[in-house]
Image (cartoon, rainbow, N blue to C red; front, side, top):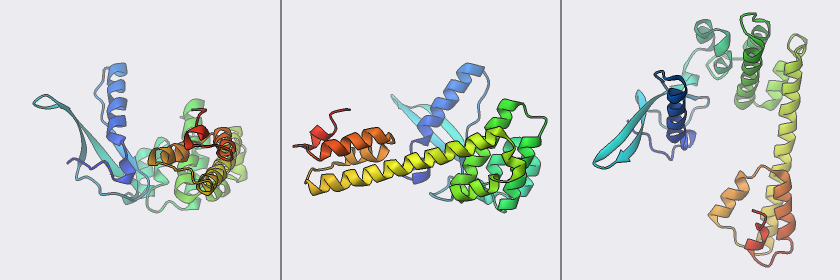
Length: 227
């Protein structure tokens, strides 16, 4: 079944999956199975497999299929028993994953002697990011901010980095809002392409440079001359 591209949860996913799968096949010379893991409900799910087609002369040159797994339909504790520590981050998005369960997952990841340090760091980072995405940054910090978890220098660094990122995103949002207000006040037209460019820009210094330019620009093109 082909899934229409306008569904918000899978924007451009087939193209990226095809690129990932092709690269993995070339690198490993092994068969590759691709899975899209959905954290939050949304969109119309495919029945079985999604399909991405590369058209050619007289038909499709390549047909790439991938399975979509809606995590919210699965039971967190049962799947953790099957997946083990490596699957802990994904269990956060499943049914029954409350704060106490997630805290236990974090403590288990940090104490699991079967994990080497790079794998442990990657797993705890992913566990934190998924928790923040599902339950919010404040809840994630509360769950991880307990003595048994915070003893890990990696966790301390992770939380500091997340807080710094949040502050940066807050400044960027303020700069975007101010930029839109100035452009509107000066009757400088914002096309859909420019709006997408502004909304997609995360560099605070660049947004603030556009804001400064907007205050005196004679035309909309003068605001974005820095590229």
